[in-house]
Length: 107
Image (cartoon, rainbow, N blue to C red; front, side, top):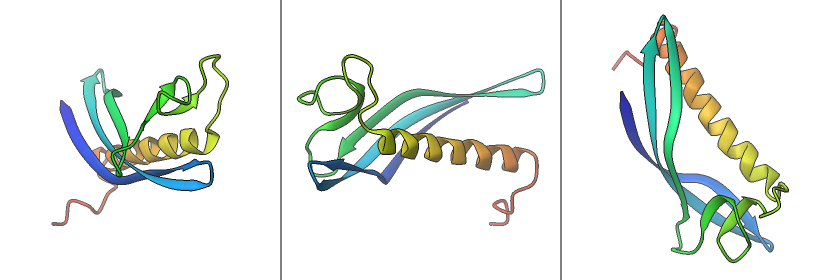
């Protein structure tokens, strides 16, 4: 099962003191097997609302807003944490819904 999602105001990236608002488009896939669920992000595109650079996982400063530099050093720990927090929250929401612990089915 695949879900394609757009998120406005996905995160804020600091760049030389400026706060850049980032939107995101992502695709997740859920697979079910033996009573387990596999949550996989199969596409993630994070881009500035102002049409500027994208947030990228690895690269140089002229490539976008890299989380890690080309040597693998973490350069944007806050951005990394925001992404992890967002997707962990999504996983928790899906888990609660599937276990019947969510009130979100009262629509």
